[in-house]
Amino acid sequence: MARILVVDDARFMRLQCTKVLREAGHEVAEAENGAEAVERYEEWKPQLVLMDVTMPVMDGIEAVKAIKEKDPDARIVMVSAIGQQAMVMSAIEAGALDFVLKPFAPQLLLEAVNKALASAG
Image (cartoon, rainbow, N blue to C red; front, side):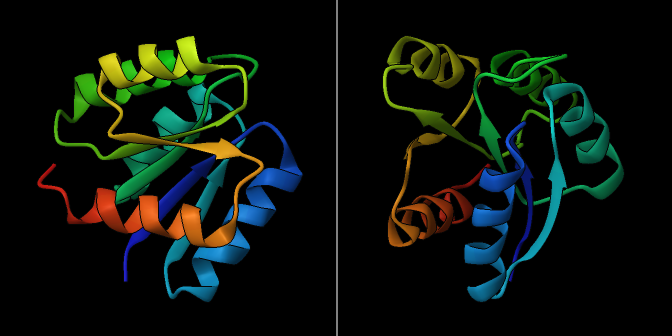
């Protein structure tokens, strides 16, 4: 299947996403902030990034911009809590393909992942 980088400062959310994705057959790596995500992206070259919006060190929007600057074809889906719609719109404008609201149903996460993977970078 696909190589997916899960980025969230909450360990519980990373574990939840990773479990759903691995059960669907994907290979998963994790990062706990935007700066680490940019580093891991360059090292690991995932086909998709699931990115939290609000994180310490570097937030998700800055990380999207940094990744897209290095790889304009990067596929990124934002995962955000309800009430962060303005930030999600900023992320979409920065180049994210889609967003999933937390807490999410596993099926909704997989639908967003499949849709993003099917898109032409």
